[in-house]
Amino acid sequence: MASASKRIIPGFGLSFGLTLAYLGLIVIIPMSFIAIKSSGLGWSAFWDTVLDPRILAGYRVSFSSALIAALINSVFGLILAWALTRYRFPGRRVIDALIELPFALPTAVAGIALTSLYSDKGWIGKELAVFGLKVAYTELGIIVALTFITIPFVVRSVQPVLEQLDGVYEEAGRILGASPGRIFLRIIFPEITPALLTGFGLAFARALGEYGSVIFIAGNMPFKTEIAPLLIMSKLEQFNYAEATAVALVMLVASFIIMFAINCIQARAAAFVKE
Amino acid sequence: MRKAENKWGRRALIAISMAFVLLMLITPLLVVLFEAFSSGLALYWRAVSDKYTLLAAKLTLTATFAAVLLNTAFGLAAAWAITRFSFRGKGLLTTFIDIPFAVSPVIAGLVFILTFGRLSPLHSFLDSYGLKIVFATPGIILATVFVTFPFVAREIIPVLEARGTDEEQAAALMGAGFFTIFRRVTFPHIRWALLYSVILCTARAMGEFGAVSVVSGHLRGKTNTLPLHVEILYNEYQFTAAFAVSSLLAAAAVIILIVRNIVEFTARKEGDGNVR
Image (cartoon, rainbow over all chains, first blue to last red; front, side):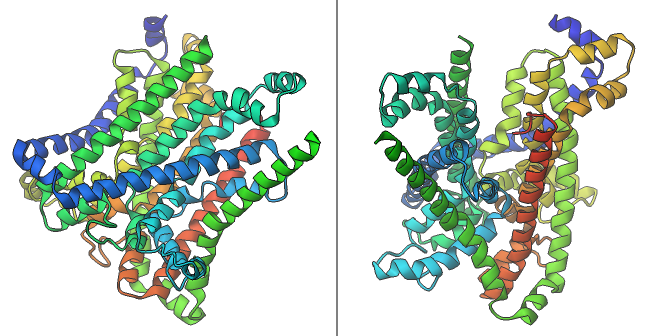
């Protein structure tokens, strides 16, 4: 069957060749230069670079704020997805349309807009300053920017699953006298968990690598509000390509682990559906 | 009793959703407009019609157009190869296509510096033909292409996969050639998904910052895109000008969102549930 279709439908050579050539040229060859460059650095120099306290602090800031932003969006993304699929209310379509704004709005624009909002003279920052809370130029600011950037991921992962959920089991639960909370926890939540985890993973991966929106609001103080992508950038500006590559390699490995975990979750969910 | 409980839960969830969207999405948009016009229309107009702004806009349009064109062609070819035929290593190929999504934009820029920059083995070869890639327009296009690489392929592959290959096989058996099959059989099924992915790809290409920032070298009037121009103005404390240029990009983003919604609405009305 498989080999038969290869013969019947034309265009395999053309499309496959084009795909491989383009993939090789744009992705595989350039990415392999990362491996070549970091192997040129040598084992001990690599570890010296990566374990430098300032770099380690950068990794810590990046990982912790990306994790918190992804968690915030898991909670609010779930609420948003729920409200958008289950309820009809004025403004629903506008909210639904706005969810993708962080994809469409250039990150630099988001960065300066958030900085202006949360600086101590800004619309929101002014109010928070009354409580002694500083957002811009602190780690909180980084979290705000990363939360903004990753809003669409959880909403758009969970929404289609909620839309296609079969109401039969919920109905059964209700007739048997389960409370709404219990129905949600025991019937709905298990159904949407894979989508929620996928959305969380995508948001986390995106937040980890984000650069444009963060650098304006972060203040970029060494050891405190310097994110790992910024450290790569400053090594590049000093033309220190080998060390920049070493820092990047660690980030790449982390991203690939996250992507691999997402693929595993999706494969398991797909296998579960097939059963 | 339970009814009342449900009603309050419902109201609370709607209120939280509205508050979150208002605080996190709408206020940032409003503040861009507010800051852009805060010093009057004359200053706004001067920033927007500035020579460097126009040059940056031109480069942004060039890079976006090139990236969308190349990635659409690639996306169609990849989707055709992956969904219409079976071959070894298909899973690996699909994973490779997704790589740019997992890579930080800064790292995307870095790989092109390493590949084509001064220290690369390719550099002297390119230099002998007078080709400049890094810190020049080709580098900016390459970085934009890399960052938006998977968009079209990823959107089209599931649609074609769900349709199966029966119709194409029938057409091929009846003697239709490749372009006839594609134009008459396949294309009508994927046109909405294709349009949708082109819109997403445009949005992302237009706003790309990190990757482009690494390869641009920030040469004003030469390798400056609109998002990079915003950064330069902002760092020079020309806040009004930075927000004025930002308002152009924000307007483009809102237009893209509106078009996206029209496409989705029309596709659904035509009974094509493939979009999204």
